[in-house]
Amino acid sequence: MSKKLSGILGKIQEKNMDSLIALKPENIHYITGFNPSSFSLLLLKDEPVLFTSKLDIEAASHISTVPVEELKSLKDIKELLKGKVGIESSMTVKTYRKLSNNFKADITDLIEVSRMVKSLDEIQNIEKALEIAEKSFEDVEFSGTENEVAAKLEYNMMVRGSNKPSFETIVASGKRSSLPHASLTTKEIESPVVVDWGAVYNGYASDTTRTIIETEKQEEIFRIVLEANKKAVSAIKPGVKTSDVDKAARDVIEEYGYGDAYIHSTGHGVGLEIHEMPSLSQKDDTTLEKGMIVTVEPGIYLEGKFGVRVEDMVHVTNRGKVLNKLSHELTF
Image (cartoon, rainbow, N blue to C red; front, side):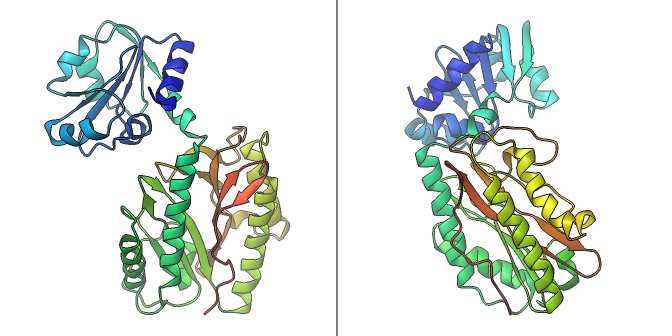
């Protein structure tokens, strides 16, 4: 039995649950090592079983650290559910109704909480994903249209071993850089350019943002954002609340008079999903622990003018260790 599985089973017992149902592919991957391509169900109890469709059963049988059985009907699994059963908040009402029996459902984020602290192999996979992403960025010429630049970047990542982009690549230039989650367009690149991208290696994601600047005003805003980034990184260490890291970045931006232009949280966990627990926000008081990997991504967005964001990935050791090697200083 793997360390991850035994740890999860121990926590299930601590919460007096008789079993736990995992449906999220990322949670199944985390515990079994197998990433489902179709609907699968992991039943965690004294003798865990991974139920998969015929589409996945051959691959799952070779990879999964948990015994695999074919998923024929949810009715068959329904008969196995008794007592207090943990379910994920993402379970659909339709699935719940099909599984519902004389058991007490307990909505839990037990697996997601466990995923916050990364093992050595998880950290190595994230570092490899980041290496792929950064080297791919360095080989891109920032000319042509926004979607052409994004396509070149994603192509470079795939060639270097990325499973896929970790999310839809953002290339937002000129006035559109003030849109934090701008969609790609056929617009010609102009300054500044905000690029938010990531690779996936062995299922683990990277997440980085760089802003390529040109004018004095862009330089001024960039310096403020970079100062906020560094202040937040310096606040990161075990025992610190994530809300305090957010405050460290926010205080810098507010001091310069741009508090209203900082319109999102300071960061989030990264791993099998691009956005994981914890959140580095005003509303999250999670205590940082060694082994967590989070992003630090303050930004200033001047509506109708331009925006700047600087995002690094940070490993919580005895301090905040920035994993990125790519320079922040990028100009046309």
